[in-house]
Image (cartoon, rainbow, N blue to C red; front, side, top):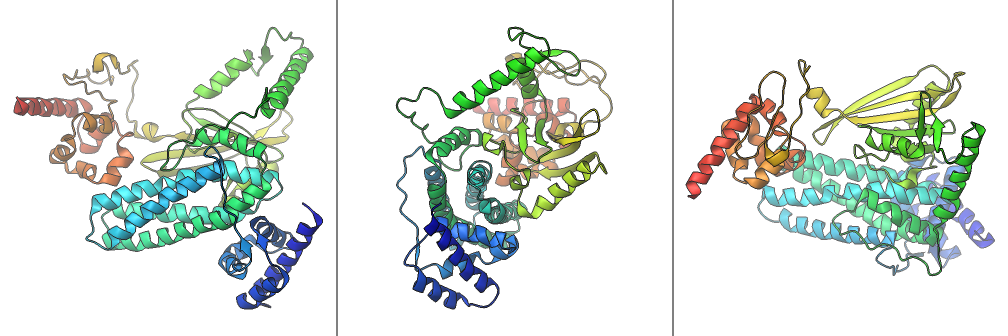
Amino acid sequence: MNGSTNQNTGRLADILEAHIAGNLSVEEARQKVQQEFTEVTADELALAEQELTKRGVKDSVVYDSMESFLLIFQDVLKAPDLHLADWHPIRTYQRENEAVEELLKKAEGLSRSRFVLNQWAEVIEGLLQYEIHLSRKQNQLYPAFEQQGFDRPSKIMWTLDDAVRSALRTAATLLRDGQEEEFLSQYDRAAALLKELIEKESIVLFPAAMEMIRTKEFLAIRRGDDEIGYCLIDPPPQAPMPSGTAKTDEEETGEDGFMKDLQQLLQKHGMGAAAGEMDVRQGKLTLEQINLIFRHLPIDLSYVDENELVRFYSDTKHRVFPRSPGVIGRNVKNCHPRESVHTVEEIIKAFREGREDEAEFWLEMGGKFIYIYYTAVRDDKGAFKGVLEMMQDATHIRSLEGSQRLLTWDSKDHGQAKAHTGSEASYESSHGFTPETTIGDAIKRYPALRSWLPTLSPQYKKLTNPLAFKAMAHIATLDMVAQRGGFTVNELIRELDQWADSQAEEET
């Protein structure tokens, strides 16, 4: 950063601070900015906000003043037209926002006509995908800002991100529950917040990112974006490899450095590098075996060291919340929204001081029961070495009752159900239904099931609600559906077989 930018940042912060203190109205501050500046760039505005934090202005005050700040700078803030290649992460965010704006236009049309549940459900289902956009920002883009010493997005914009997420979820719940008027009111609030966020991303966040973050970092971000996914768009193309580049920076510095450290560690313990094994608490494991164990654990793990930096998360299919490589090395406080940081700080403080050794939370989310457990990591002398976080989808475990003492599992060979419980022999379906068949797969094969099942039990009426069905389609197995309706799984599968037979007879 050059001296001119430093000077501009300080002066802009002076004006903003005077406005916050009540010494300048919005109009007076706007006129002062116009008198002293012909142009203010997005990164200068962002750095001025960062300077306010250094002066002791609370994040909540800055967040509440964001609209005023944009009005103050409206005549001089220059948001350049960003002409970016399709692989570029910022272009991906722009494309997602464009897709969301099309959905918002469609909703405007729906709001002027008779309320049709399925049409609104389609809109909300699409808008809920915006959580993917937010997750990528929080796990990929915000850490890149922090690497440049700029933590404003993770402390201020994250609050707006969460407001949008919460408003959309509330609207979806009201729609699912059939509360039409309440839904429409909540949707208006969610849409306004979403438009506000898109505007701030376009005017401030994206231009500031292009000024502060180097191409090298954007290439790394692009490599991690696929792990989280995309909102309403197809995956962007991969970034082109720079000509003459033999290895990425990760390959040159990260892998080689790690292998040197590993070799030194092996030699320290009297093992040759060829052996490739390391002493663990009980036994010896190769690095490959250690990674395989972490990948196959039926839980989601992450580790924060004693310096409160994220050092590790398990690469497992059982991951509960999205993560990406951008989180590694990040201060754990910046991995949480401003409203929940105090809880993170309280846990770490209690663990560090030795007052507590564990903390647990649980929540119901998207039809799943999520269990979260934190434990203090200490060495053999009791010194605090960090925090291990474990997350698990405990929906199935929570549903278990009684005992199962016999070895049983479901064979999916030829779609035949073999053994399911130790208490009764499993019924073999003539149509390929098994206890583990999801309700979504069953209805995909037999669409008319969706309207027939509620005649079997009133508990199945939710299947006719598009949002409720979407939430449970790929989660609820026939075993779970049977319990919900008061049947054994064999009884339900027999009913399904008889119904499928009747359908076949009607067709002939």
